[in-house]
Length: 239
Ligand code: ATP
Image (cartoon, rainbow, N blue to C red; front, side, top):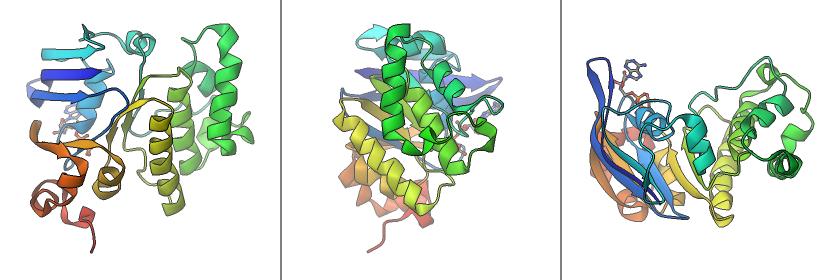
């Protein structure tokens, strides 16, 4: 469904990604893990159209979408939950959601709002609250809800559990499973590698801009060397 091949993305003279390839099949949960600065955010941002690659290709449903704008990617069915949420702090929860649903035909917007309100009940009570006043957990839920307003077939999530209380971390990983059972396809970046590998089908390990490993999530969970070398000791599964 989503294929990335030979992708190189630069910031000026620095190549943050070098000839990176990955694929995500329809209805799969694919994880992307790796240490800080490995290029995970750069990869998601390039796929979502926020950054232009200097080389390589992104294909969605077999068609090249390389370098398409974020709006075109949304219309093609791919949405991003960005790192650090990137909400419009002065705007209300409802306004942030309406922006997320701007590509949805007007007669379907109310239905989309109802659907995300059901998924994130905490947002219902905060409809008229400015996003800047939300707690970290509420803001993260709004960031995910905003991306879901466009009813994407493919959802890219960048560190969705970062900084959340344990109960909300559970909520986020449970949600990832529920979104897949609704038929969506997910590519997820997480520092919490163990939790991600427990919910993902397959995963890729990125290190200093290059793909270092890939495989079935269950197999990668067993690979102590990955946790020691690439992902970092604290993420190691216990027991
Ligand atoms: P983290 O887990 O810390 O978010 P990451 O794996 O998502 O890391 P990226 O944020 O994609 O990594 O960064 C990859 C490399 O690109 C790093 O060396 C980073 O310093 C560099 N980089 C990221 N954004 C920029 C930028 N706007 N300008 C210049 N260099 C950047």
